[in-house]
Structures are given as C-alpha cells and as structure tokens.
Length: 249
Ligand code: MF3
Ligand code: CO
Image (cartoon, rainbow, N blue to C red; front, side):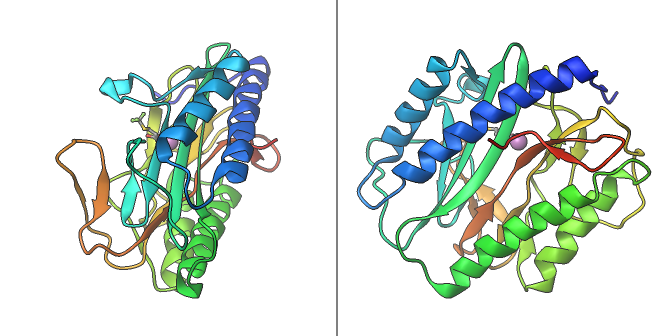
C-alpha cells in the first residue's frame, strides 16, 4: 500500500528534507583531498543531532554509520572508515538520511574531489540530469514507471548504464515504503501517481556495464567491471501542481 501524506505530514517531510539538504551543504564544504570518510560521517552525525534529527541509516539492518560514502567504483553503501582518505581526482557519493519529528528525508549527491576527468564530470552531470528528468515525471496522471523510463532514457542517451539491482522507494514515517522505483523500464506501467505520494528517486549510474556486486562486508556495492559510478537522490512530493523537491535548503 502506498501511504499518501496530508499537508501537515508534507510540512514535516519538508522539515526533514531541509535538514538533510543542510547536511549536504556541510559535506560539500568538507570534501577535499586529505579528509577521511570517517571525519565526514562524524561531522554529519554531529550536525544532525544538533538539529534534533535522528540519522536514519545508523543501525538500519545493522549499518554502522550515519552516512554512506561511496568512492569511485563503489556504487552505494560504502562504509565510512578512518583508513579511507579522499584523493584528488576521485568522486564520492554521499548518501544522507534523517528523521525529524518522525518523518524521513533521504538524499544522495556525488561530489568531485578536486579536479576530475572530463568523462567523469559528464557522468556526474548526466546522473544529476537523469534525477531531474525522473522528478519531472512525478505528476498526477502519470504512472510510476514514467519516472523510471525518463531516468533510463536520459542516462542511456549519454552512453552510460543504469544499475538494476537497487531502486528508489516511497518514504515517510519509514525510510522505505512502497512503491519500489526502478531506474529503468517501459513507460505507462505501475500505480498512477497521486497527490500526497512521497518518493525517493535515486538513479545509480555506471560508466561501464550495469552489473554490480557486494563486497565481503555485506554492504559495499561495487561495479563488477571496476568502472566508476554516480548516485543522485532527492526526496520529492507529488502534488496537484508540479513535483516538490523536499531535500533542498
Ligand atoms: N538512500 C539509501 C536507501 O534509500 C540509503 C540506505 S543505506 C542504509 O536505501 F545503510 F541505511 F541501508
Ligand atoms: Co534512498
């Protein structure tokens, strides 16, 4: 069942989304060669707690940190570590989720570390554009897979591939609610979109093939071919009018 949110609930979701966006601003300022992913995690956790927000990932199925830090060929769910130091020319996908007053916001962004190669820059631009192409389809009257299809079209137009094994999701009182939102597929399928639906749309895009595997830590998802991957995610609300992005300042 897809849980529709009232206007009061949407206000609460917006508050959660704003705190997550503020945490991303902090990360954007901190990301530079030499910082560890452990430091990023601590700074974000400190910030969230200072805002009376509860990190959504910590303890989720035993996940050990407040954010995910996924570098280069890591697709998602990279675990922050004291031993992982950011290097010039890398990219890092930072995923942040937080509850405020019982409602969840979830957003991921891929940041360049210093100067990156032009084709990697294109990967980031394409993945961000694919996210917005998906959001644009989150309108009353459309069906869920119109989002999926728009994301896939935008990604493949630039010769990149969409990860199949992980999907976006409904979000609200729980971080993961129905429906699942694949980033690929034909348009015109699935439930009709209705006002009050709140969705986390999150394309994961690979420079090489879409195949991924999970490392022995049971969390870290990497590309099978070792090529790099990007991840952009916003939590949005479907309304009578245009889609509303909740995870912005
Ligand atoms: N944005 C991811 C998701 O929606 C974050 C989950 S990471 C976990 O699934 F550690 F919480 F699992
Ligand atoms: Co998510």
